Length: 59
Image (tube, rainbow, N blue to C red):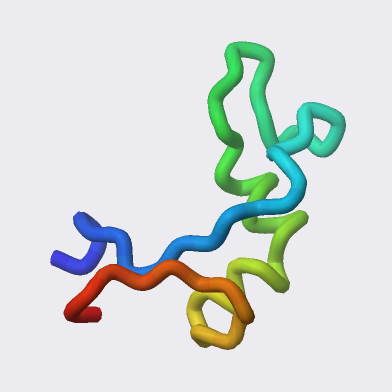
């Protein structure tokens, strides 16, 4: 299904932040914190409205 493929991607100018709990002590990504702090980026990916989006062929 669609959950098993990447539809769009964007490079971040700023890495995930430990201070904003986007990275755990073990170095894993905290998805909930990333979605909370980067809401505009997530919305732009879903809408396709970001200026620099990577989108695989056929999508």
